[in-house]
Image (cartoon, rainbow, N blue to C red; front, side, top):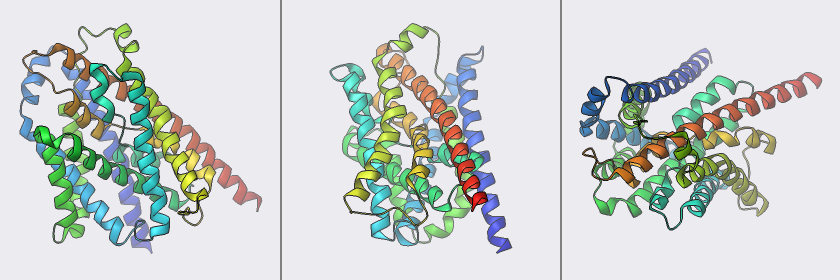
Length: 339
């Protein structure tokens, strides 16, 4: 028992510190790209193979995690698994619809996939920091939805982007496939986790989040249909899509919530799903490829605005989540005390 508690504490610490490392790398990239050393940053990000290795390792871990959940975890019970899986699908579909409503018929419509996927590292890091006192089954639900929508995003990449032979899309697909079918992959998972948290994800953020702010005004960001679409999709589409679809699935008797979960619990974590980052950076790169020679300034600007919008929406989602989760934890603690 003590060993299990110690292992859980280590995992919580890793997730918390990993989330901090990811945030730190993104902030460093943003500052570096707009500093007097911006030339060095631009030279560094030309080393595409480093970013490709980082995203491969990340999706390898996603594949391993998905395999574990299917064989031993929350996806093993079909009736309970159907709720988070359909919730993930709803949490992807509604943001795409919302983004497309604001961007249809414009060059920015290619970015429909940017607000689609929850960042599992950010979501679990916030949960580790403020989720103490919430039901254990709730963390499992959050993780299952995040893993499912990462995996479904890979399917979207395979359908819509692999034909363009973008190296990042091929590498992402290869990572998930290897994780799913690699012999002994589940044994590799725990050893790989620290490398993902403190290596692959921060490196990918460092190489992808460095937006050049010169020439981008506040008015340009605020008036961009891409900005409006991404922020609305993450702050409204993701939480409403996940929780709303979960409610519909249970009410239609297709599935049921895990034992011990209440709808108030799900509402408290709804905005965790609006924290889109790592895969959003990937989707922004796929939708609006950066022309390092400045040949397509329009796409470069849309790419930069999209990443800034993801930053803004993810930060707001994290703050809302922290408030709601602490409020729910206090309510649960109070109800136990009154029993």
